[in-house]
Image (cartoon, rainbow, N blue to C red; front, side, top):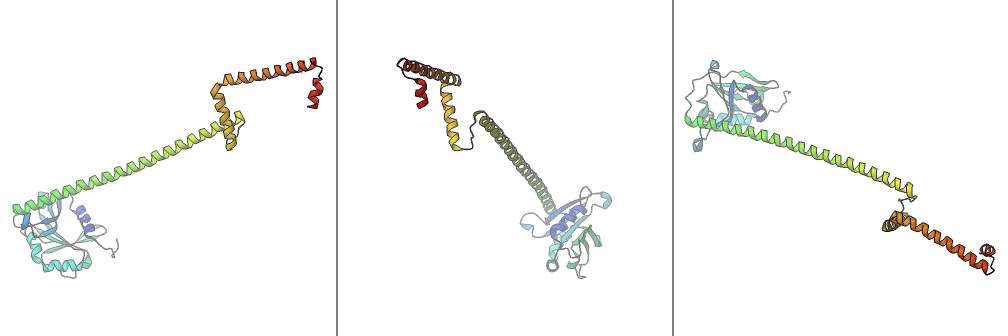
Length: 263
């Protein structure tokens, strides 16, 4: 990230999650000073050192990404003090352009960089007021809200993943159908070609389509064996009739050969 990087509150929260991660720390965002109607002040974040060797210190944070927001915070000093009194360390988390040498006394400064949060000024230790149940309830509510957000995020990611899987499966199914259709068309073309070769009909012309199907219907109506033998019987009968007629004409004195030639 370059110096011109425009930091957002979301960027800073992500870096805080890295710096104050479990099991060394417990981190909460948007913590009010109390639950109910008395909760009229809040800290942008709260963290606690979880190892006794680190003193179990409580850290409070104000996240600022603009100069105007920081100046507004300075004018409302009571807002920070409402929660800072319960903390052993109080921090401003902000990029360099927010400050102009006016960091309040007793505050530390964490600056976001491309490698993570860096301590520009350590927050001095202070004696903290014992945390009352009202503030503890607010911390626990914040933790519960964070857990819900984690679950919701996991569900959303899983749902998105399932949607992607469904879309992929649908596309694969469609492609299989297209392949099957192409295979069926190929088989149909081969079958038509075989019919054309066996019958002599060209089925790419409608007139021949009609002749072909009329012939098929005629054969189907009487059966191929009957239609074949029937045709041969008709031919034999015709031949017998011709012979009988020629014989009768000969007996009457007609020259059938000349008749046929003149015809």
